[in-house]
Amino acid sequence: MLNEFKEFIARGNVMDLAVGVIIGAAFSKIVDSVVNDLVMPIVGALTGGGFDFSNYFLPLSSNVTASSLAAAREQGAVFAYGSFITVLINFLILAWIIFLMIKAVNRVRASVEKKKAAEAAPPPADVALLTEIRDLLKSRPAV
Image (tube, rainbow, N blue to C red; front, side, top):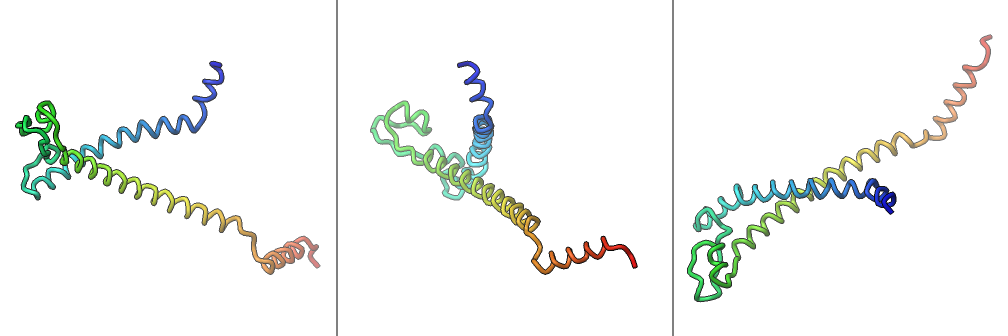
């Protein structure tokens, strides 16, 4: 059973998945930083609500009197639409970057396949016949 587990772990797909998850987690932190530190302050400034867009919420209880989302959640139920908008923008940026990466990879793959197809294509029949005649003439003894 231990050997089967070693074989399973050593498979390329499992290792590729592990690498993808680790890189994805790191990439997610980069996108979070872009959204929270670069995009949302600009959106917050444009909407006139300050620089912390993620703290926008509507209290759903009369007990909620706090001005920050974390404190408001401790006091009662809140509708945290600012957090949702931040996460939504985060998702859209991540999806756009992944779309661009896949588009670039597909473009590279298509060009490689096109080159392989061009290299692997046999010459036309008339060119093949002329090449054969040339080779036969070269192999004849000189007169």
